[in-house]
Each structure stands twice: as C-alpha cells, then as structure tokens.
Length: 376
Ligand SMILES: *Cc1c(COP(=O)(O)O)cnc(C)c1O
Image (cartoon, rainbow, N blue to C red; front, side, top):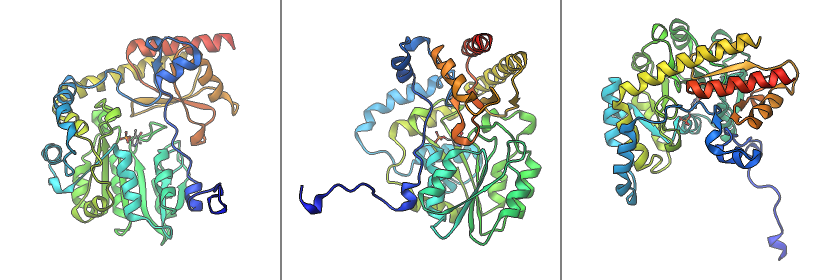
C-alpha cells in the first residue's frame, strides 16, 4: 500500500457521519435463522404492513408488467399520475412520485433545506424526518410532544427565521395519535407562507370516517403545503416502494428537480395503478384493522398494559416501567415467533409498537404476551 493509499477511517462530512442509519423491522427469514423457528409460523407485526397482502388486481398488474421491466420505467409515471389526479381531483402536474413516501420526505428536505436552515418535527414522530433533516446537514428543531402527539401551538411558537420546513404526521407513527382537522387547519393558517409544511398521511386510509378531512382542499388553499401518501401501508405494496406527494406547481417543481432519475419502478407504477381501483380491498383492510385494534386493546387491558388509542394500523403499548422493558419483551416475543417493533430509537424504551394483524396473528401475539407476563 502506497502512502497515498493509506486507509481512510472516516469519509464524508461531519453531518453525514452523524446520520443514524434507518433500522427497519426484522425480516421473517432473519428471525427464523436466529431463533431456529419455522418461517411459516412467524408472525410479523413490526412494520405496519397490510396483513391481507395486496389487492389481487395489483398482483395481476405486476405479473403483466414483468415483460416491460427490461426497459426503463416511465420517468414521469404518466398513467399513475393521471389516475391519482382524477381520484384526488387535483391536476396531474401537482403530483410527485416517490419510491415510497420516505423518498418524498427526503426530496422535501433536499429541495428546501440547506445547512444554514432548520427543519422542524415533533418528538416521537417518524424517524425519517430526523434522517431527512440530518441528510442535508440542517438544524433539527424537535418540539416536545403533547400526550405523545404533535403540539401544534408549541410548534408554531418554535418557528425561527431559520425554519424552512415542518413535518407533521397525521396519524402519527409510532404513537398512532391524531390531530383533528380544525387544529391542523388553524396551524396551516398560522405557519408563515415561506415555510413549507409536509403533512404525512401514510395512514390516511385507516382514519375513522367521522374524523376524516379533505387535505386536497388544503393543498389548493395553501401553496406551502405538501401532502404525502404511500402505497406501503393499506395498499399492501411496501416491497414495491411507491408513494407520492401532492403540492401546488411551484413546490412540485423543486421536488422534481431533486428527484432521482427513474425513482419509481415499472412494477411499482403498474401495481399502484391497479391497486387504486380496488376500493373493496381498502374497505376490507380498514375493517380488519378496526377489529384487530379492538382485539389487541382488550388484551392489553386484561393484562393491565397502558396503550395509546391509535388511528393507524398499529398500537403503541407500554410493556414495563424500566428502561429495558421494551427490549426484554421484544426478545420474549421473538422467541415465541412474534416480531414486534422496539421503539427505543424513538426515545420510548418502555414501549413496543405492535402492528395490527389478522385475527389469528393478533391471537398469536396475545398468547405470547400472556405467556411472557405469566412467566415473569
Ligand atoms: C410507513 C410510513 C411512511 C412511508 O413509508 P414508505 O414505505 O416510504 O412509503 C411515511 N410516513 C410515516 C409516518 C410512516 O409510518
């Protein structure tokens, strides 16, 4: 090795070194290997996926689109954007496609923040906001939560001249908390118009009908608003990485300038397009989630466990009082073939986030919980 080729121990700027790599839910195959379990018997309730799988229409569309995968995808996602535009009653030019909506969150940070700016989000909100802000070397403005959800008045009060982008998740992950429409609208009216707001609606399909609101009307009203949504959760297409943002033309323009070339795949576009049509599938996902939430909540209550009522397809449950409680129960569940999600990286080491599964999957999880608490 020549002197010029001496090993370099650290690459990248300090702000890059400070990024914590994203940690996903454990894959089934990994848990099977690690704990010597049959993969078929493992229940994964770790990543808020749809336990029903995907719409049969999406599956057919994927198979049909296989042949086209030799060519590059449509970089503009014409057909999918047209379909989304007509479903949402916005112009197709207002839509930005992402490989997952996480891509949109990153695009917003890349387009709107420099290392001289600040991005704001709530404590206990989606970890990708942290990564997106850190990824561009911007300053983090992390506003304390109110009862595990966003404290919008506190977020308004925390705005400084540096603030250029605010993330709000509704419903929020990992807590499942929900902001009523009137509070959100009041917030949007008070945010200065030069600050962009990303309203992250990854779980919009799971909101109770009585609480739903028309965020597309807000996009028409507020030129500084980006609404992001995903095909990963209710649509059951997490592995295909499809999401989108809706915003007025000036914001959409900058998002598309930082968008990677061909960021959504041929299969993903085809699947998303077909999935959009299958309203019955989304209705079924909603119903299974409500029933599963009730099933899990009843079990938590019977075990004396505190949980946060959720408008998502997951529940945050407090599993003990010490700082190792989440890790301990997580391990106990893994040994019994149930993959839940530790949330110590969110600053919630006494809690676990459990995705709502099918009735049978929830029952497996509940049995494992009972087992653990009976033995301890
Ligand atoms: C899951 C999730 C997303 C999106 O995930 P993608 O798979 O990248 O679309 C976005 N926001 C929140 C709050 C989520 O929980």
